Image (cartoon, rainbow, N blue to C red):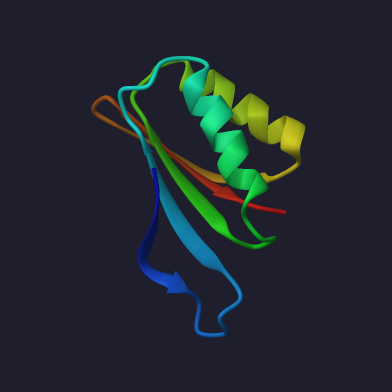
Length: 88
């Protein structure tokens, strides 16, 4: 599920940040749903993806290499992997 973060748009109204909770999904669903969500975003938007599948640590960066988008940040806290992806 994709949901807007606290401030969906920047002050200029050009960029949005969206949170996608993919916790509990197993490979290949996190990568497939991330690809679909990125296709619906505008250049400059940020997609924050939360996953619990350990294979997402491999799959999501590989997906980003294929799409040409930018993986700005990856966090790992306990069992949750969080990816910050900027759409190009």
